[in-house]
Image 1 (cartoon, rainbow, N blue to C red):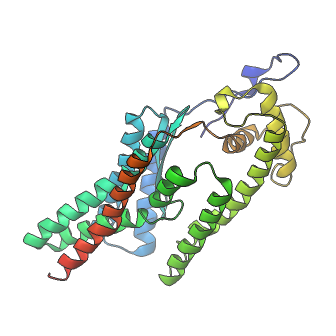
Image 2 (image 1 turned 45 degrees about the vertical axis):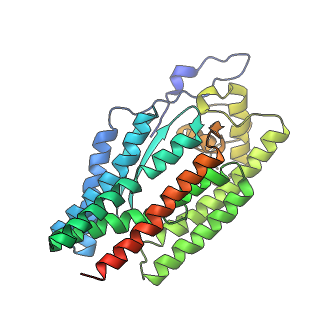
Image 3 (image 1 turned 180 degrees about the vertical axis):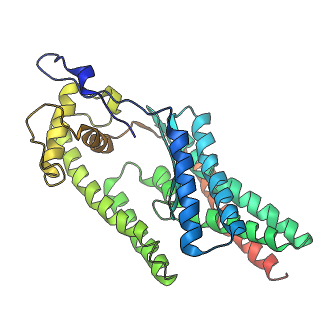
Length: 318
């Protein structure tokens, strides 16, 4: 991910050492993404002993889903947009923007599952007229993977859409929603006897604990009139070191080798930078009015509920 070079920022300004300079890896992400794709394919094929055709179909569906997010971010001028595969679990697209638009983020989220559902349903209709087992398999993968992603649980696209439209600014409700998501995904994993899938809700538990601690830091910063609703690039140097001290005190075991109050670069500064960035809240533009919000929700309901009902009714006739 990002790294920094301490030698680039050694001079102090007003006796405050400048915050480390982030260096974005813009050249090697495609190579890393390809390597992650290969690892994903090899592990999936080896562990699940699936056919080459099924594995290829799954990768195509997954890639099209993530490319929807990718190109939507590119359309809205997100910076440092990258696509990576998580072996056996899925893939994700990351990107940065100085101000996050509620409207744009909603489109970015829906740009993943909606095209996949449309493609899957079209393939299903073709198969309905001209039956083909491989075509039916591909249609089912398109539909299942993308419909699953629309489930209203974090960190799935459906959960992210609900968060962006209704919960983004309310920490307490977001915590409750995250707990519900953990329980929902854990139930799904247990019901389907998928030990591997349990990794997701278990990892969410640790992220939830970290977020609760991070919010305590935000509460302290707010009491001290320190603005955390800012991008890292715009964060003042003095605020960087203040937040850094808070992180070191709150997560003393994780950063046991670094002393709070000692404002020098450490060997693990890149990790501390990422942690501080997770505490900061990128400015959020609430530009979706209720009429537009209703249209987005109706679109969500159509693809999440109406399409599956039509699929089930037609599938019963096959």
